Image (cartoon, rainbow, N blue to C red):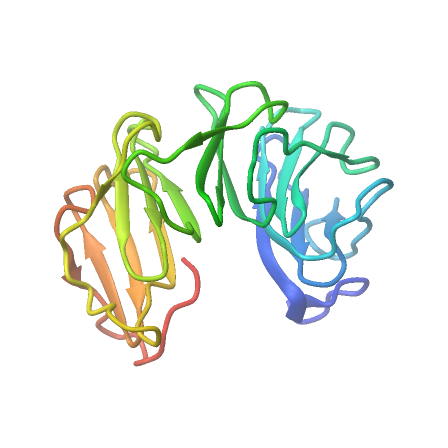
Length: 233
């Protein structure tokens, strides 16, 4: 819908749906922090007390009946355990507080955050973070978790796709040439898909790519798309 009172929809950067409460939507914005809707987006509230970050880059939730939510922001990782009424900063161990995304593995309850210093992992709900950087000494902009094999993650920096098959402990850069050399042709979007094992989608300037073998090789997959960069998938 294009009628969303209480929310500047043009500033929305990240969305999360609550699987346990289908009408609940969490929106991370570039100006107003985290906004929450309990009615499928008809009205919005938030961000709640104690939240001191306006620019939100990513949202993750645990999907329980009383969900815990984590958000990645320019000041670190913030967490709420009361549906967004109150928030606390949970960034211990993260050396670069400018966090650009956050992903949660529902099976292992592991959290992954991408930052200017690579990927950090938390096994205790964000209380402590440990850098996972073997083979990945770069600014990571996006992460995608393989839903069929949560130990497999894909990351991107400005130009390349990296893959870890051991939960982020070690990383290997893909040799696939996605025509992403130079600053204008960088990688923009990265995603995996439930029900499609090994599938990884990536966009670069004016092209969209798909891998069917876990980011080892890619083929162009943009038939029908306009020749413009895809920002998110």
